[in-house]
Amino acid sequence: MKKIFVAIVSVFMTFGAFAETDKAWVASAEKYLNSITGLTGDFVQTNKGKKEKGTFSMLRPGRVRLDYKNMPIQLMADGADLYFYDKSLDQITTVPLTSTPAGILVRKKIDLQNADINVVDTAVGKTTFALKMNLRGQEGLGTMVMVFNKKPVSLNAWTIIDAVGNKTDVAFSNLKNKTDFGKNYFQIQRHKTVSTSGGDDFYD
Image 1 (tube, rainbow, N blue to C red):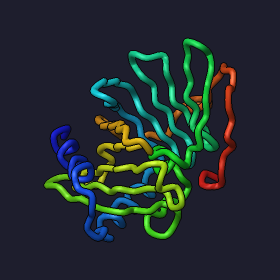
Image 2: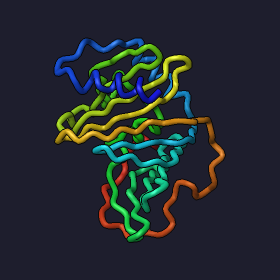
Image 3: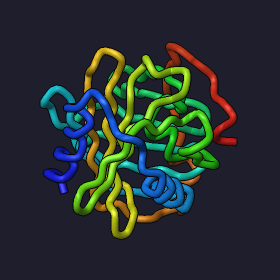
Image 4: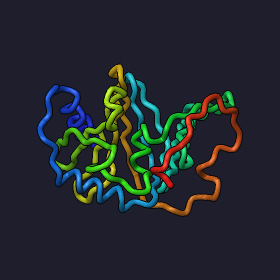
């Protein structure tokens, strides 16, 4: 799976001009994403050659949790913002949930064709397909690539390329449906907030 993921993402990284998007694959991804209520599984994040492992959970609408195994860092979304929680400092920083791939996954209604999400290219491999996208009006902030397995359609990985070209890959494994999370599973219990951006209505 990893080799397929690297190959399909490298297509987007290599070429400067892209073909017209394949609407059938966009529609397949949209249908799958709207069919999900909750997921849990494992992930491997790669950034500048450094790999970090952890566990991933999501519950629509609006809730996400990533726990890193070897770092005192937790990413949490409660339906308004995405919180970067440094446990060693008992401190968080927030970013708009809308600006992240996780934010796209947990919207109440996911529209990849007519809303603010702009799919600019598709690529298809033997067993996977990928969508390259950005947010309309925020194209200069970077792009996201979401990779899906083809049969059955399911989440495989995502890549974030920021405004200066830094790339972070997240590959998923052992994903399964789950909705019976604990009452406070998507809540940070203790923190000092250092910045707050406010939420939006995509998760209401």
